[in-house]
Length: 227
Image 1 (cartoon, rainbow, N blue to C red):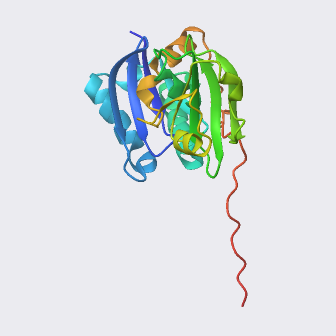
Image 2 (image 1 turned 180 degrees about the vertical axis):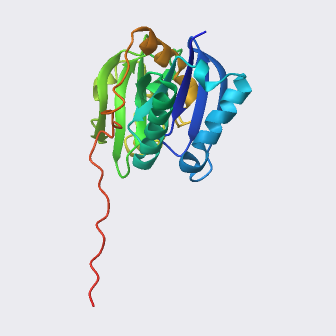
């Protein structure tokens, strides 16, 4: 067996899955507020119990590396690193946008375009072919406008993810197709990507690997207090 544990924490949906040679054998998830911090390790234990395996049986651990929630990505990566250190297993990093696209890998559409909401009119996005999920455009942060993706109007393009609604409503284009269902990336769609990376020994350095935020975190500065 080639068991790989996949962890996805980039959005409000926290999910964990187990695959054997890329085939799904068990998955669990939670949308409860704060699930990443409170339930992730419990979800990992639960999925291992459902599959009747021990974590030491794993050949590797895959993490959805971003973009996405700053807090969620940090918690997911820290958990994955801890497991890799403790179990002496390799770590595999998968783009969150590619995970989202993997759900539609069997689509009849030629072009797959995930859109993850990055607030206001900005999205995290990439462009993939439906065949082999080849990246035509690498993951990037994009401010949407009327000219976004016009180069794909002659193609059969499918847009999906939690950033689709604002793009469709703000810049309607009848040449595009939209999927508004299940807008979040899920660990159960990471299996084939993770197994391919495992076969090609695309493992990460546990010491230096950081989440792929795509843009700098802009937190609020604390207000000065005057006496």
